[in-house]
Image 1 (tube, helix red, strand yellow):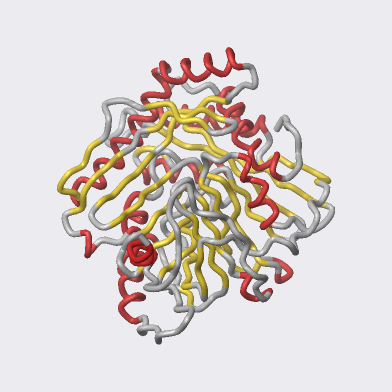
Image 2 (tube, one colour):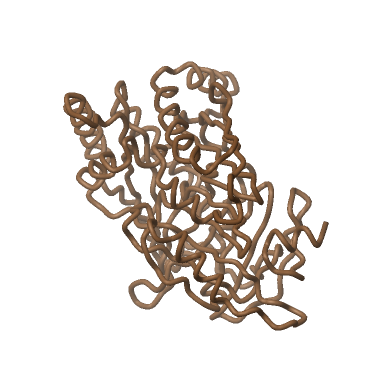
Length: 415
């Protein structure tokens, strides 16, 4: 098993376990500069923790990612035989905007063991929560999106869905520790927890994206490719009867099933030219996190030419899906830029890894916060389709904030 695992990660002698049995034993403390570029991804299937920055991938847009990744690994010198070989993989994040620069890098070290957390600072008190935009402004934007969608249906390329997000600015009375936040997001074991550096922010503090996403954008292992899109959501209840009712109502919802079908269709259409076999079940299934119900569909395929197609290239192909942008993608993105009033940055982008063999996994960066010093900015969105209710969509985004707010020590908040 160990040799196959090492091949999967792209480091010939790297001892990495895959599966639920992988332990989160702590590593020895790393130098501060190494921790500045620490990356973490922990899912029910695998764990990856890296430290240090060895080399940045030249930043660029989604359209050039596949070529840049191929060139990077082609030019990467063969590492000398040592007791601790350098990993041959890129980790990092893709932004929401396909035209914006990504942030991927080759780490110094990689393992399945969690970083040393003993130096984590105490959790600061949260002084202020500021919605940007306000709930009322968000509901007004939903109304405008619905009007734009209706008006577009007389044209050649009607807009069928727009995903509108809102943000929540968090002010602490001290530095917000992204590693402690990452640790405390462990309360939802079904999610993929991630932490990735984004470069220095104001005042020289490192910006990081930290979250626990339920959504796999794409994974590749040899010829096998998988995607598990989620679209259509309902807030969970602590009352068992009400919780089951919310789940069944979501599963039966025509509006949510239409929203979900747009996502599945788009992913299938984009993957089809790359696959000799591609399949999905006829309808969605319920997927739960600690705070939300979702409609999900597992898509599976086999690639025509797996040696020529990397996981990063597939992520760039699919991203952003209608689950986080809308349909058609470019028209929906125009509406988002016009209505949201802020740059999403790496929210609703993707976080993951790809190795020199082209294998890898990328997760949609949802249920997350961007941290920098004593501030954090949380994001949440909802898919707007014909039949959407502005108040209900605002409620959905409020529910999606709760996982990160709890990890920050904020009890149920009305935002």
